Image 1 (tube, rainbow, N blue to C red):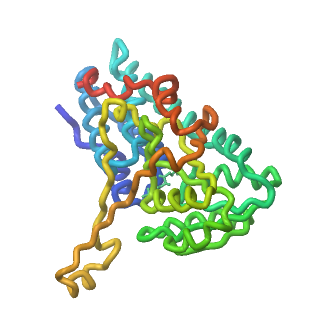
Image 2 (image 1 turned 60 degrees about the vertical axis):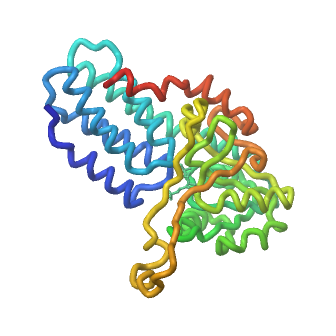
Image 3 (image 1 turned 30 degrees about the horizontal axis):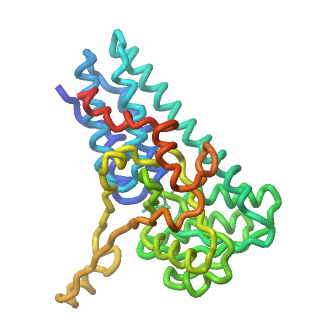
Length: 320
Ligand code: RUB
């Protein structure tokens, strides 16, 4: 029999939905931390009941934000430990807890490593443009800054969520000179930009990058101006199921985030659409900086095959 979902799992799911916890890496770590806590308090007496309870909690978390592949990947990675042959609930719980800790630690290490690799691509005098608020992209900038590279940044506003405010907060605290611009000013300023660095919510097998809405327009403007376009992404953001031709779902959020309800009511013939991510084709991406090194987008398949393992997508078949 299922026990009532622990508050932590439902709270975390709510916070992810409402974007109180946001950014692909943070979402993944928060979901894994919630599952770990959920497992610790699970009262199940037998293994199959325990596994079912964990699958229910995992499904709830995975459904919160459909685009960030980091979320199902992280959850599937830790859930894999439940398929191990364990003699008791308590040993299964120990394995699960270890898998969660390993994931959280390796995901934090990945950010540090991406910072090191990405910083090598930033030179004295560079003007870098970033979009949205990516921990991985920011770590490249912060590491370069710590190493004494002198550069400046253009940061976009990021309508409608205003994640640009988080980005300029971080850059300001580090003392990195930054110019804050509206999203639609990107092409106007592109001639002044040496490099674009953004994060990713997902990378598909052909090297296409899913990131905050507007990223693909920025990539197009960068391509036109021959400005290099770098993506900072942990390997667990690569999407194994795209090998089988599966598309990455693009999340559309409430129209009220763009046009408040009273305004919408005053314009009955107007429909508001609010897709929050878009897809940048691999032709517009120069490099993807991962914790395993910087790769051209065409090597995304190798990352999925050698570092991630596509069996990650098969966990349901083995745990249900
Ligand atoms: C966040 C966003 C970020 C990626 C990568 O969108 O698009 O660029 O998630 O971030 P939202 P990170 O604010 O809608 O979650 O590098 O921190 O994982």
